[in-house]
Length: 293
Image (tube, rainbow, N blue to C red; front, side):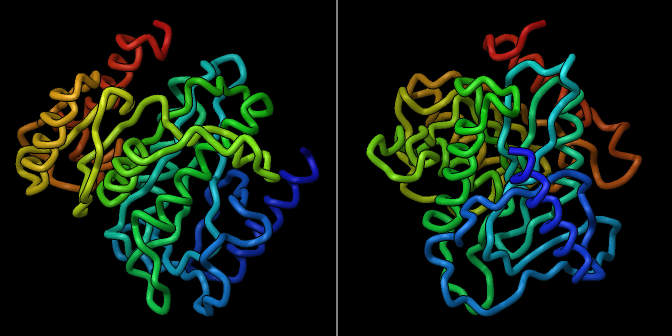
């Protein structure tokens, strides 16, 4: 696996070097489909990092979906893992605020983090859909983490998904539309289950439709602010999960707006009650038996 990881890191470094607006997340980036993602053949536009105006970095025109691997220190590793889905209106992905910053916070809890760089529905020159290509990327990421679980010190029965804003919509699709793998597939990754063991939806956005919630939907944690227009939709999804008998916890804070990730956009975020939500998430994980105290 050393060769694979080294090769992935070299390709990642070359990609960053070709775009002056790109940032190096400081972790290996691994292609989900080394031979090309199904449904992306013939797409001509190149991946592009948008010049930052607020200190955060966004990437779009993604045709080679990948995960960037952030592992906790070995002595802290709990075996729990999350695939992280950054937001950006399905137009771009905010790779630090809702990606690397989140991954580092999870690592501090002993949780392995895998930032998903997925294909986006609002990509010019492509016909991607959230519930088709984006969902396929999320499912593939979950399968890949399970396939390489031993290498990454992950418990294959403790792999979750965490989404922010538009990424929260994708996470909702992932937790309601999954399969247990294709045992006869020639691709060993595809033999793995795509069902997340738990899900976190942070101010989930979008217009997810036809979500089938039932008793097999994973335990879910939802966080949103009351001054975010998405609060009613989050409350409605909570109600649907609860009605189906799914273990679910909903936190609605008074203020803080939208798009705060785990660390906020400015230092002032630390003074808001919503800044404590990562602690509530960790307590939920312990309460559900997914993490040890």
